[in-house]
Each structure stands twice: as C-alpha cells, then as structure tokens.
Amino acid sequence: MTTFFDALETREPAQREAALMAALPAQVAHAKQASAALAQILASVDSAAVTSRQALARLPVTRKHELLERQQASRAVPGGDVFGGFSTLGYGAQMPRLFASPGPIYEPEGSGRDYWRMARAIFAAGFRPGELIHNCFSYHFVPAGSMMESGAHALGCTVFAGGTGQTEQQVQAMAQLQPAGYIGTPSFLKIIVEKAAEMGVALPSVTKAMFGGEAYPPSLRDWFAARGIAGYQCYATADVGSIAFETAAREGLVLDEGVIVEIVRPGTGDPVADGEVGEVLVTSLNPVYPLIRFGTGDLSAVLAGTCPSGRTNTRIKGWMGRADQTTKIRGMFVHPAQVDAIAKRFPEVARARLVVTGEMANDAMTLQVETACAGPDALAQQIREAIRDVTKLRGEVELLALGSLPNDGKVIEDARSYK
Image (cartoon, rainbow, N blue to C red; front, side):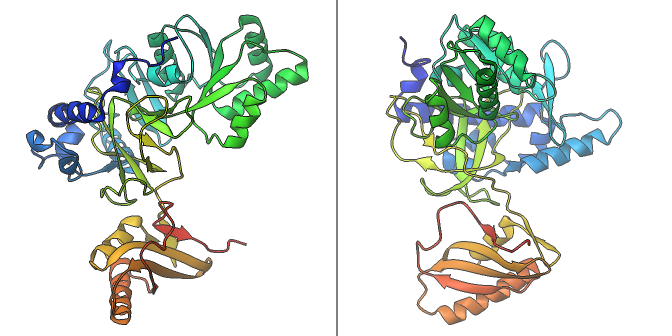
C-alpha cells in the first residue's frame, strides 16, 4: 500500500521552503493584478521583494471580519462585486459554484481538479482509490460537501452524497452500500452509529473516517476506536481550503503542501516563536482566491520536529480556540491589538495579558506583564498611564517574572462572573 499521497510530502524541508518562497512573489504580484481588493490592501508592497518569511511578515493581515466588511460594502452598491473584490474570476464555466458561509461571506469555487486540495488529507485518513465514501458534510450553502467530494474524486473514490440529517436513512444507505468509510463531523457519525445500534443494523464496512468542523477530543477518538472505526482530523476553511491534516502517527496535524502558514500574536501580524500559541495566518497559493496573510481567527502552535509518519512538512497542534478575544469592559470594547500596542511601548515587556475580573457593570482589569526590569515601580506606573491612553479605561498592572504567563494564546482573559 502506498504510504504517501505524492513525493511532495517527503521533500527535504529546505527544498519545500525554497519552492514556497519562490512561488510567493509571483502570487503576491498576481493578487495585486487580478484582485481589486488585494490591489488596495497591498498597494505599497513590492511583490518582487517578498521572497522570505521575514518579508511576508511585514505585509498587512486580512482577517475574516475585514473580508466580510469589504463584501458587505461592495454588495451595498448596485452591481457591486459579491466577493468584495477578492475573487479573480467572474461567473461562468471557470466558476462552477459559489457558496455562502455565516455572515454571509461568499466564496468562489474554481474549476480546477481538487480545487480545495482535500485529496491529500483524505488519503492520510486511510482512503484509497476505488473505494466508496459516505460524505455527510452539507451540500447546500456551505462548501464543505463539495470540498470533500472534489477531493475524493481527485483521489479516485466514489462518493455517496449523504449530506446532513435523516439519520435512519443514513444508516440504511450505509448498510446497503457498504462504504469504506465516512467523512463529516464526528458528532454526526456518533449519532449514526448509535442509531444503527438502536435499529439492530450492523455497519461492518465503516472502518475509517475523516472528521472536520468540530473538536475531536481523545475521548471521542477512543469511542470510535472501540467500535472499529479509525477517525482522523482535517483542518480546512471555506476561505483557503485545506490547511493541515492528521496522520496515522496522531502527533499533531501536518501542514498542506499548497499553503504558507504563520502563527502570530492575536490582534497583530507579528510571528511568535515556534511552540507559542497564536493565531493561524494562511497565505494561499490558489490563483482564484489569492488570500495573502489571511487571519483564520483560530489558535494553534507549531510542534517541534517532523511527523513520525515520514511526512516532512511542519506540524501544528490543531485547533486550540479562537483568537478574537475582543471584550467589552465598562461599556468600551478592548481589542487584543490594543494590548499589543501597550506592550510595544515598553521594551522591558516580553509578554502581556489583560485579565478582566469582577461582575458585569462592576468589572476590573489588570494587565499582567512579563518583565526582567529591575525597577518595577516606575515601570508599573508608566504602563498604567499607557493603559489609560490606549483603552480610555483605568487598569491595574501586575509585573511577573519571565515565563510566568501560560502558553495558551490568550491576550485578553475574561474571568468575570456572569451569574
């Protein structure tokens, strides 16, 4: 049995990095030329100079809420572009479908084979050409069903379009068609398996699954394993397609070969050290929807070393929460970017975390900062003044030793009581 989807997965890391950095300036140039929105966002960028991760890190971040705002503004104009100027294609054969995510945010689907690049993840979950896959992701509005189906077709599999709901019919179809496995959310497969047991129907052919769209804790993985089903995670979004996938090693998620991923401090575009939790930014090499430094809003961290499966690409820990920690305090919104702005005023501050306590309408905030400063009293007072200046709110300061703050990606912690 073939171990890898293709030779790209086992390249020397330096070879992969060189290939990605060689493709980067051309993609930035294409984005500026073919996407009206990115032409504005990247107006001051010299595409030819974006040949390294350091150069990429100087480019602006486009977060999901900004993409939505541009789409909404464009749609408000008669005849405006529903994609807000991000798509490089118009309607027609080159765009067979478009989808809507909550917002709504509209996403184009190009006509290329395996447009969303899901075949690699499906392969890593154990599926092989010639098998039947029962696909229970939604086929309407959102792209999930099409994402998985196009990847399965590229792999050489047949797909039963199960979609969502109708649990008894799903059980009946599985029993009669005998698929090799399931693709969808883990919670829905659990419902199907439990319904099958209730109906007294055996599903012996379903021995593998690829999950997405929800958390997949070890307890649920063990629940499926006890029933003979090996389930693996994938990490993908409607904006950039496949980002990372789990392998048989079950040690983090391996990055897809078609994206450049950075982990940055929430609310900023500043890359964090490997191992530190931050927001996942993706630069897509997709010419149809060439998002550059797209902020997914998800938290993760880079894992050290390479995957025991033999794949050599970088690994991340998987989904670790949301990066948008904007919090309302005494009637004012405080953003992670403001916390970062305060910290950057003081070279002595290594990391900062705003903790909000008390009760709603009677809350307090304390900025915890890591510092090796020998004269803390003066520094604390200066930081208090900066808090007032940046947020227009009063806050206390707690000076901590270096390494004291937890590595969980939180810039703002809402610890208030909501009773």
